[in-house]
Length: 360
Image (cartoon, rainbow, N blue to C red):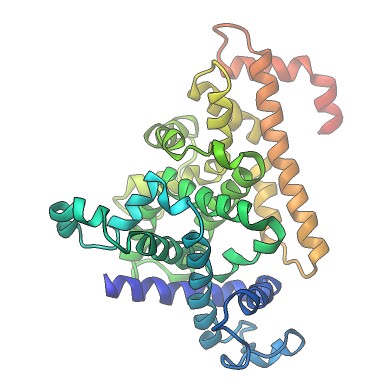
């Protein structure tokens, strides 16, 4: 467990090294946030200059130097743990899994009841949650704390953890880790980035559109097994080959771009009489019709340098989300009884041909 923890933290620092080249402002916001909220953290002790002199700790690769990234990683975990300890999020039944993760599996199987009533239960859960979040997302996970506020930040934590479990991404990551020195390291980092981009998209959607008290993780997670199988069926023509003899791994990356909309599809399904397959198929058709995946990928690759550009990209992403949800709901309302989603989609597009001709 210690060796894996060292692996995760080294990987997190390396990913932050890459991310700091593109999102330096987010790291500066995180530094200011930690300075404000964590008494033990200050720029002087960690040799972090003022923002205007940050170039002094930027290396030849245009990244923040690793010793500072290591400090930011550590104190970001402390910041999140502090917030979690003061919340009720770690008291929810779904948080128990993070308590059990702290102990060896064989130990849990024998002493589950004792662990459940451990006097440091809340502290352990908060520690494991914070480790998970920052090891996967890096320091910049905390950078929007002031912008979205405490309640929505807690919702962000919960939404990320739900999406991570819903998509089954832990199994996919471990497959990547087990292929160190077999897969090209650039490919590994790119695949990890794709996973985190998708999780970010899903998390942001949940934070924007779901009320804190409506996020029932048990209810959402009941679609876990059906989700990937359904997307694989809908998107059967796309084939991705990354690892030999790993069909589940390869299929995951074939449908990854569509996973980002899955929570929205689940929520629409819950509020209608339609089947999940019907709703998910229409989401897929709308996304392809408007060519939204290439658009999203293009937006993610653009190097942004100002806050105004970041705001503009967020607004464009929100508009894309609106398009998918809005037109899926429209077609569901339009769909006749016993009409297949493909027929409903085709008939709706034909019915609204003038509008779509103007758009396209």
